[in-house]
Image (cartoon, rainbow, N blue to C red; front, side, top):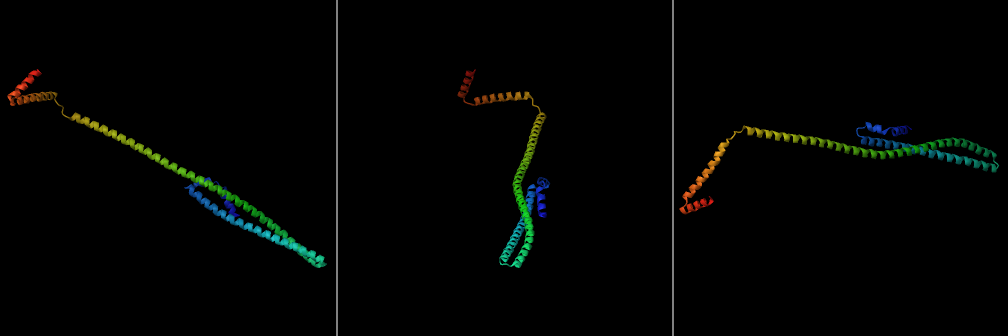
Length: 237
């Protein structure tokens, strides 16, 4: 019965409390189920042994009952034959066998009760293990979901870190643009200022030079060409 006690203790314990202490609930559940199945096999073997004891006890009862009936039959035959002494011996044997039969019946009833009890316990424990197998599948599904959620949470954390890096990049880009603008402004301030009078003089010097060049070209051309150009100038006036 020590096997049954250990098995019952495990089955009646709070399995969730055991899982809370485990680093990996799935592995813990698998190990618990292996232990429970091993114990169930031992209970099964012990139940079969007790059932066999019931069968043996029943056979002994039947055999003894047959002997009792046989002695009674022979006693009747002896009486019919007029042999009372023989009949007395058969009846004496019958009485001894009847006493033995009473003891065998007591033994058989106890074996039968134990066999019924063991079969009920075995069936109950077997059903409980089947229920635990279903719960194991549910727990494994929950663990798989939890691990997936954990991965998603880690990815979310990575995305947050990436967003922070992108913000830092933008700040650095803005800083670089500001530094460039400041540098260009400083370069502009450091450059030598120009005199607008010089620019105006160059403008008119360029125009005068163009006129003189054009006039020289006209003089170098033939007289007819010069006349034509002079005529065009007069028309333009």
